[in-house]
Image 1 (spheres, rainbow, N blue to C red):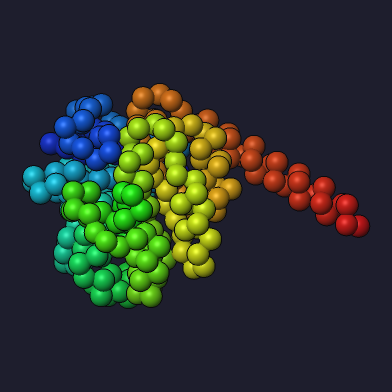
Image 2: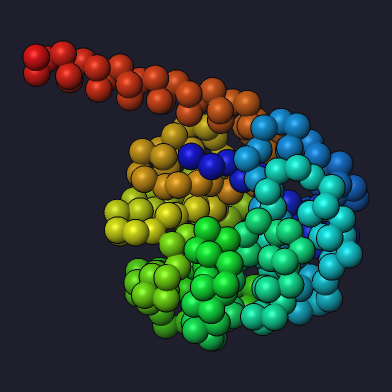
Length: 255
């Protein structure tokens, strides 16, 4: 289970939104590098970096993102406003570990296939942000008629293996994840699901792991102190040990 700490940038500051609404933005820091280093030191596997200005068409945090990518040792997964194949290529060449494609993927699926051919499926993530079971794009401002399941199947045909699936209604609400949707998607062969939206406690992460999810993005729960990365790690270790114990018991009973 991969644990990604979210770092959303708006006008150079670290913020969190509720359900993607910019009017709900709460500033947590004016020093993004300090926050990035904090999550790195506390054990995040990677940073989930989002440029909200670019996602909403309000500008960009280009130079700041470059400094963050160069200034941390853990991998950076970048999303938000990457709406051209050229921009995606440039970020991947600059050292971003994974690029997240949402609007571009829906508009030009073939470009995703070309990026996978050039950089490999491990570096490309397609964002399937959904509201009422339908995919939304353009920084969650434009609904589509495409279901998450249909979109996932379509992109899998282009070679996509990794999907960031965000439950918009739960994002930033600390109300718990949509376990059912994640379990259904994780059961699809050949895909790896990264879950985002509503996660607020270590038991949520354990539940998502049991559902087959490959990674989680933790945001507001960390910033508000609902859970720590250490607590999540401890819960996952305990879950793993419990699973090993059950396996050993079942094995012994068959002998």
